[in-house]
Amino acid sequence: MLTEYIDSIERAAHIIRAGGLVAFPTETVFGIGADATNSDAVKRLFAAKGRPGNNPLIVHLDDAAHWSRAASDLSDVARVMLDCFSPGPLTVVLPKKETISELVTAGLETVGVRVPALPIAREILRSAAVPVAAPSANQSGRPSGTTWKAVAEDLDGRIDAIFTADSSSIGIESTVVDCSAGTPLVLRPGAITLEQLQKIVPQTRELQADEKSEMTASGRQVNSPGILHPHYQPRAKVMMVDLPQKELTGEQSKDAAYCGLDVFDGVESFPCIKVFDSIDDYAAGFYEFLREVDRQAIERVFVQTAPEHGIGFALRDRQRRACGG
Ligand code: AMP
Ligand code: MG
Image 1 (cartoon, rainbow, N blue to C red):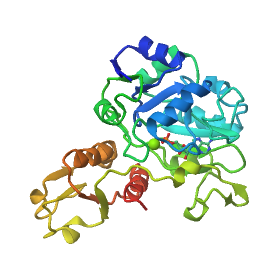
Image 2: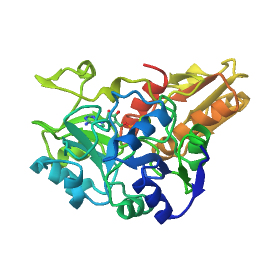
Image 3: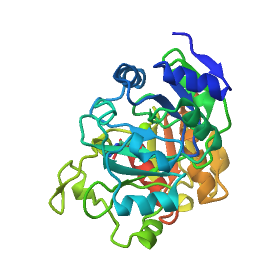
């Protein structure tokens, strides 16, 4: 398939409405969009990514007021969360509407819904006027695409079009909160933190490590299979380091890369380095750095463990998973 490189909102929307696949930017990461009501399109989307069929897709809307295009019900808790954080990097899991393809939700009776904040994304969604299933724009298992060139590396020839636009500013996927039953449960950390959610809905809590087995959170089935799949992994072996000055000084570095917030003695001997000025920059540039390491065919990458505050909590989650654990 010949992939078109486009910068027209109308063209992107037209391709999606016609059942095609278009990668487009959002503030979190780039997504590959397909009409969520068209099972043929969604089937092609899973194939293009090589994504396991039991990992559900998030449905994107142009406006939270249009929630009923994807969901059959909106609880008070979900409404409050959407009022506070949409458009933005928040996905709420709601009871599914029947017109959404069962392939999108991997057979679940719930659907993840998000309204991205990036104007280009919202305009494409508004113009398409259908609910759009959009997983991260990368080959399944790889670091998510945060630039259109990274998307092209993984998906050129596999999808109909790539929207050429600037990098994603947040760089980490949305916070996913299950609002479909009882206590809201954070299934995946993101830029919207647990503390922010608890200010709005105090009973919100986080999925615990021992609950990530598709089974019960206080007796309730936690159905988010995606949290168990391998994710965000470059070809290079990723290792987390807490104190690079202590752990990496004198480290044999010819075949290794380093990224983090701190420099250390001897860092200049590593052939590929990225030192970020802030935790937000670290999150925004993390996946792209992992991809750069692969481009340079470097086999090991040390990543400084993200501090556990703000978006650092979500970044640390992605770092652990990039390590394979
Ligand atoms: P990605 O498309 O890679 O950002 O992954 C989307 C993730 O959102 C999935 O892997 C799930 O963990 C989560 N998700 C999407 N839909 C649902 C749903 N209906 N119920 C629970 N989690 C969901
Ligand atoms: Mg993904």
